[in-house]
Amino acid sequence: MPGRVSFSAYLTVGESFPLEVRAVAIALFYAFGTGVGGVAGPALFGALIDTGSRTSIMWGYLLGGFLMLVGAATAAALGVRAERRPLEDVAPPLSVAT
Image 1 (cartoon, rainbow, N blue to C red):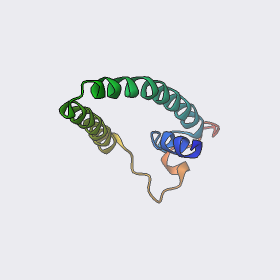
Image 2: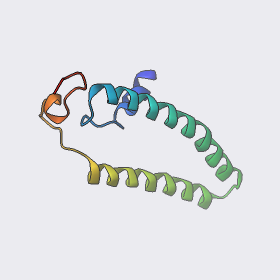
Image 3: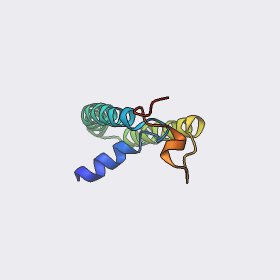
Image 4: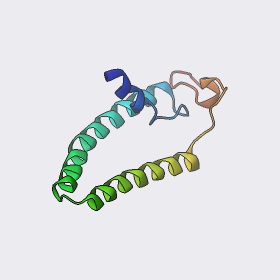
């Protein structure tokens, strides 16, 4: 599922940045997210499952849901509307001389 992973990494970068900056940001977000998620996620949920308590697992899911809500709130507060606008209007490429 490499296509799926790269698509979700692309969603972390808004189109309000020039193409060159976006490419670097996608690579960094993907590397950081894979590193943290690949280590911390299984370790945390493994520890929660090891407790044998359904309540502990519930708290793990609530933590994950809370973190997603924080991400959504951040996007709502800081996001830039780019619907139906050419990318050049949202952010000109770095290669354009001013």
